[in-house]
Image (cartoon, rainbow, N blue to C red; front, top):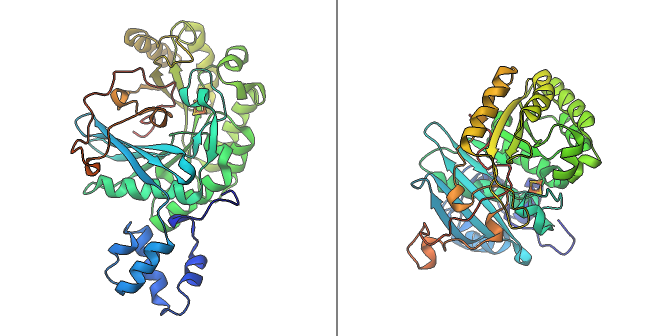
Length: 372
Ligand code: SF4
């Protein structure tokens, strides 16, 4: 949080709440804390509190997210929400309901400063860091939106590079685990390859899943696609991944946005396998669609399958993602750059927007990459 930012509802700690409820019976702290985190209630909905206290808390604990727009796809299975933050920045959350699980993809920054050349979010740059409260609130809102299904998985794959906002992201992981009740094995943190952040993550008390947006497996190509590779080249990144896996025992996955004639050649598969196989990493293949600043096409479906088979032949398991939500750009950072349907309660009565252009989706760490 910058000094000018006012703490929002989920920025407060339990000790902040104790101070806030000074003069109230001690059990009020538990009531409010559980109401916020386990039940996801607004203070006004906490009917076990006196009315005056509810009103007071509603003022003191302002929400950090204001819904600007919401859009659905996949027959309502995917819900993309666009939120306004204090100061006017916008971020996205994508809720994905699968047959066997419900996953939410959350943002950690407004925009992103990593500059991956194929990514619309990267092309727009970093606006600001999210606070812990703004990150946690995305999950709380998604959990309510998912009802009566149970929100099971959280992936930090929305806007931003989570490890470039380390303190807020990690505090959010702890809050989600300790207070919201989401197991660390259900939380995936993704990174484009910030090696110090991976090493720091490995030393934390909660072993979360790690996803690395690889996209290229030789330094020359990766330098050109993912600029951070110039600072943390592949050998260093692979070593950090190995140490992470050894320290935590958690699953490691690599994301590979498939770009026609750029990283979908047999030699690319061989290079990828040489890194992924020793790390026992799973690979997620996502056909890339062009963005305004990077007009190269994604690999056609047959080419993606061929690449997958080649990896299998080299001993590497790979999944081809179904690009859930592509028709609403539900992937890495697209939402905030675009206009989507107003929420149903904004007066249109339309949760889905048939007028959405069939625009190419993101350069992506796809929102639905990981959880199987
Ligand atoms: S791909 Fe991810 S890390 Fe790279 S610029 Fe886009 S949001 Fe940032």
